[in-house]
Image 1 (tube, rainbow, N blue to C red):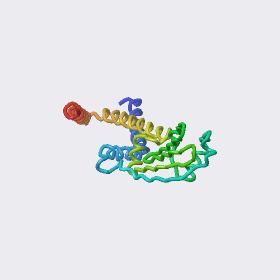
Image 2 (tube, rainbow, N blue to C red):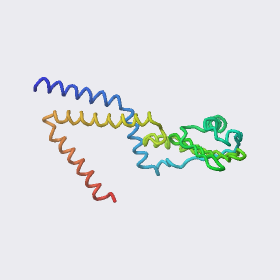
Image 3 (cartoon, one colour):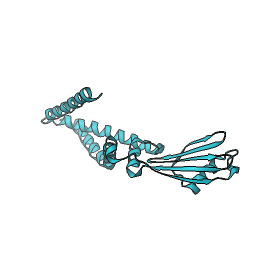
Image 4 (tube, rainbow, N blue to C red):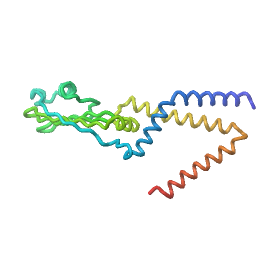
Length: 194
């Protein structure tokens, strides 16, 4: 075996081992939440708890809506959490929506008198985990975490294939396993998927 090839295999093995260990908990998280998403009805993921609050805001904030002040007032006085998703100014009402994984807060505010109704919806821990899996309402940084997990899986898979191909005595067993796995997936897709 040439020294360059031996070095290549050594680096592949090192990358494979340490990248797998580095991403172990992240990969486990996506495996568990993927199962959760595939069986949402078993776990009652999307049975949100809803509570509604009534109140009012000063009309001075609403005639020419001061977006920052309205948002901060909703956060401090009415418990709005999450990122601001929308701030819609209509003729007689304001509609403000905050979203985060597993949670949504929506405020409907009458501009004339300042009366408002705030509706909080929360899907609990499982709903939050499911939304994190999908990147729903989780922001740009979490999207990078999801992208990193995808890249990590690709690199781990490629280094695994390189290591498998280097095992001459077991290469045929691996080829049989890959062929069976591919055949089963294709058969299920073509036979059972509508």
